[in-house]
Image 1 (spheres, rainbow, N blue to C red):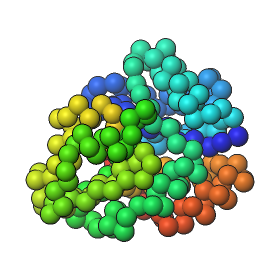
Image 2 (image 1 turned 90 degrees about the horizontal axis):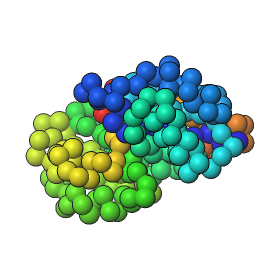
Image 3 (image 1 turned 90 degrees about the vertical axis):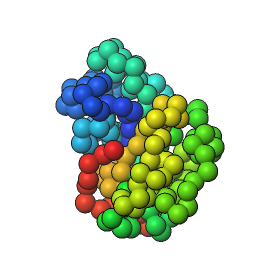
Image 4 (image 1 turned 120 degrees about the vertical axis):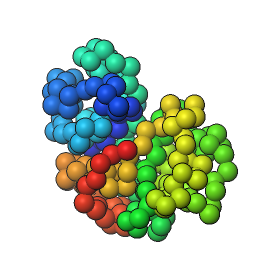
Length: 205
């Protein structure tokens, strides 16, 4: 049994792709996922399953289509995978209050390297970018946010290949996943997460 985190793309944004989180959790349980919980309204699901990452991703996307009539894509991580990714976060990510700190989850089969290449060269005087696996870390001071390259990613085709959460939400999801994980997996994830302590939750982006 593995604990997973699923991050749905484009749910409840600007009045579009509306999904009630309680109904979503119920649909996931009916589909055979265990210990299901959702976090805030942006489509974040923590659950246990004996199936593979690819299998649960396909199952979630299918149930959303059948239950809600929406074609939604998802990024799915095991608790250990997310813990490992967040443990590799640069020191500048999530460390200051006067900046945006985003976790940019890349949707398979696209890779983080491909997304970075599509967005183009970073403007180091205005933003910082790094990635580990399928997770891109991005930070930009609020005062110069409009001057960044990644700040306009929503206007690019690349935007369809990613789903974004802020640093607080990403860390909170790991915290929930560690708490929900079976004992052996929880111990492994907790150890990996030691360098990425959770902060108070914030709104997702």
